[in-house]
Image (cartoon, rainbow, N blue to C red; front, side):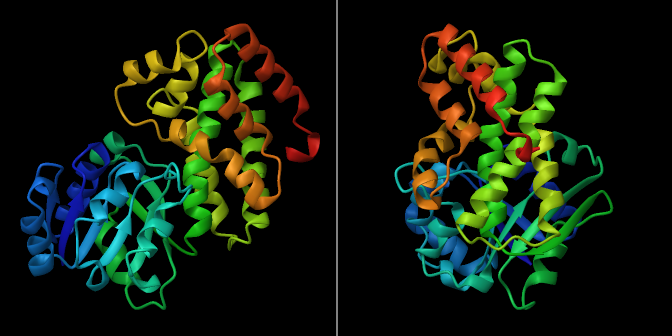
Length: 307
């Protein structure tokens, strides 16, 4: 298979290594390539069968706008986030480009790029809406003895969880920054899982039994590691301004952007998102004393039924 990866960051580089180990032809399409629109489109038209999106969610639309041959390619999304302004998940952005449902996949799971590069055992979900036509082919691009790919029917729930877990990671970072311990963090993680599940049900997203372990694993990983940009961002805003925290991280913090969509999903699902709403408010609060009180009050309000 001839594969092109859009995005040569840490995750794109890790995926490149996997695909190359599986003896497929693979190369990057970078930001510089897109300054020459015709060259990029011609290159993808002539030699790419699979296009992998490994770039920030906010950049997906602008990149796809410069490619005119998407309906003949298999698209694999590997990013986790929500587009600002439209509040769309990656599959919704791609669907506007006339890509058939069976040609679109999403690869999401608990997987830090550097650990994948180091060949540490990892398991991820491969979400699909296919009729088995392309599943084995796409799975074979990535799977290695140290990188297990679990096939899951359904994409919407996976991508929603991939975006919202970033918000809960910020919440855990905030609690850590405020001096709360692991008991509190576990309470936030479990309540976050329940909140995501409730939202999926309200939105009528398909949630299979096999989907939950991967969602929980991704949530646990992101909420418990200083390697997580979202956790780090949450910890930093306890003492720094949002601008200072983002500058210190100096990389995309998807949860920061996803916070803009919390009200949208509350209205769309007719649901109150207690924890996600707390994070959205914390990002806008400049007074750190008020932030601490908001977090303390919110954690106390998490009902027992949510854990």
